[in-house]
Length: 179
Image (cartoon, rainbow, N blue to C red; front, top):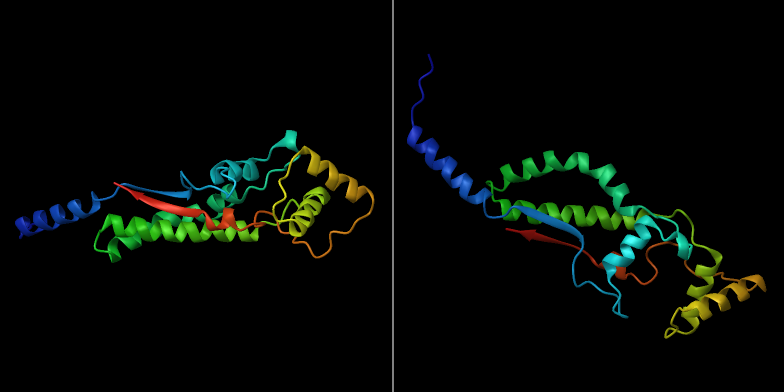
């Protein structure tokens, strides 16, 4: 037979923990609503195109988000549990720290994505934009980039790194704790 003493104290402690845990219920991490490029394009939309590709436009998938989730998500439950305990079961604080950590993991995945490599036309467009920062990419400018590539014009000195041309995608990764 087991005798339990201090039931009132246990009930009060559990009630206090319950109140703290119920302060927040989830955290969203990624490209939040309202994040846009300077031209007004949605960062989430561009991120989805980069993640899944756009075959008709000749853009291959670069699965930075799915890769990060696959590699990092197995660690999340234990990390969240440890944070809850160390934060005295403060769910809002724990989810904020979790969001910050996953944000960093997603940004690191963007930085570490190198494949597939950029096409010669994309590299030429980068060169053209470095020469004319106001350049708007249209069908005509893509055609001009293709002509320059065919003529043998070099793209040396242009960054070949996918996903970080302007830095907007990388800088737009964020998180939001929800109640």
